[in-house]
Length: 145
Image (cartoon, rainbow, N blue to C red; front, side, top):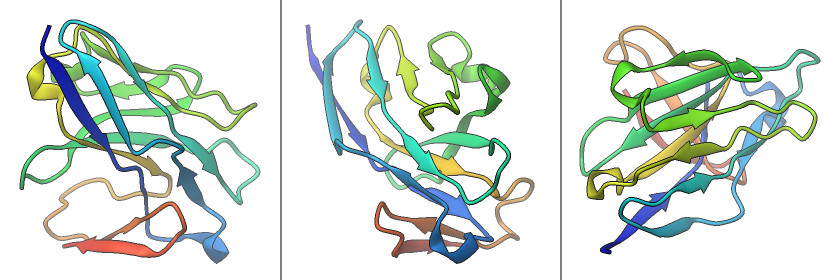
């Protein structure tokens, strides 16, 4: 089997990062798995809200814009983009503040950077809205316009 190198960069995409307390955390930066196998990308979050926030996963390959994979508002409730429904899944566990992304039947095309994003985030036309990508230590990684 051909090994796959899945680079994982997690960041909270938000417009209102309340006192910098809203963020996502990632222990490992890169995962390696064999084609046809399964990998789980871990994402833990902190939120200053008392309600369970919405969490999002995005995939970015090459120089392309990040592509929406799925959102979770509690448990496995949320939305998954049609092209990812068959092999990508996630469950939001608010008790341990975790929203891991499971990718099954890995393909070479799954090699990419994966972003875990914390609400509030931008929806709609990303060409007209400004988004900040936050790194693990809450420094701005870069801006997307």
